Image (cartoon, rainbow, N blue to C red):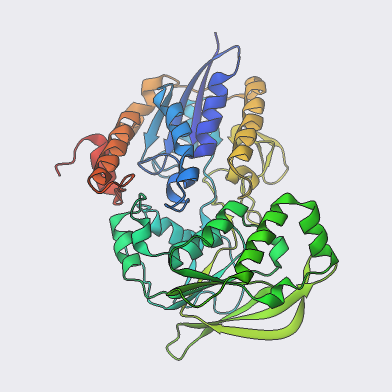
Amino acid sequence: MTKLRLAIVGAGPAGIYAADILLKQEREFDVSIDLFEQLPAPYGLVRYGVAPDHPRIKGIVTALREVLDRGAIRIFGNVRYGRDITLSDLKKHYNAVIFSTGAIRDADLHIPGIDLPGSYGAADFVSWYDGHPDFPREWPLDASSVAVIGNGNVALDVARILAKHADDLLPTEIPANVYEILKSSPVTDVHVFGRRGPTQVKFSPLELREMGELRDVDMVVHEEDFDYGDAERAAIESNKQILVIDRIFTKWRDEEVGSASRRLHLHFYAQPLEVVAGPDGRVAAFRYERTEPDDAGGVRGTGEIREVAVGQVYRAVGYFGSPLDGIPFDERRGVIPNHEGQVLAANDNEIVPGVYATGWIKRGPVGLIGHTKSDAMETVSHLVNDQASWWNPESPAEDAIVALLEERGIEYTDLAGWQHLDAYEIALGEPDGRARIKVVPRDQMVKISRGTDRD
């Protein structure tokens, strides 16, 4: 019987779901799957891109853990594609590869001053507070008033973490160094700016509602943003999600403001113009143009310029994929060009044999977990049907890739190692009744996973 040796690069939900779907399919060939991950721990953005106070979303980890714990997929953590293994290596040892590397860079925002000291990408901040091992352990929270640019869930996460009292994060898996820095944060006012109106936000109702439940934080909205026209009223009447969001805003509009020690301000119809520098060359203000509905589903500028004094700015205008060695890449969209997961050559749009993509690196940073599953199913379907164009590896034996990594001195981590690190983190949190305390330094993660720690 034919055997498929498959490599998957990226051990987030997209890669794990693709492996699980393939293993569960009825097929006429055996499957052997190796999952490569550049970090010592799996789960991708579920571990390193979801705010720690979202246990419901973190529950996705349970499903992912069940897939890995079955032991049908080998995992090689702490292995970076393009450095530790190459496309040539994969062709030598596998019949095909699926790239599921996600999108972890901040999308650009092209306005003057966006690169001033004190201006940051939201993705970097999220990686810091989630304990990503490749980011500094310090973060300069040194301003009382900050701006967050964006009207999606990432903007809400960033704003919530900045406004929330650190002690209220203690039951979560927030790293110890992050808690200490948030505990001493001087932030009192967080301003969230969106270019469009309240009925056009990309927030999920659940995340928005949670903002109003923060202890000792007043929600501040502005009546001028709620002078709805026919299009806005029609959207509320026809879309249940928008209806729920409007009800949340209505509740906040009716509430008294002024008793809390912190405030979270929502500004709509605010087109970013400039991050303004102060005399010291650092961020001093955020300047924007007031917009209004254009009667065509968008907004237009009014010419009215406003400015809010802030000491830091966080742009949360989307994530962006990163190019991979030897793989076509669409620089404009930040994705691997593909047809339903079949990678396309950059010049002639011909299908590249043996190379596939799934998840955000395939479709861009949109959609929820449900989309990720259907996305993986589409890619796997093509992989199964493309048997005639699979690679013919010269060294497909399962122990060959292990020998290669060991020969190169790569300190890879395997499933047993991840399970050991997982149990270690959970045990760290148990004395304080916490879900876990993440181990942050990469070298320590590797040592614990490989059983070489002496702490």
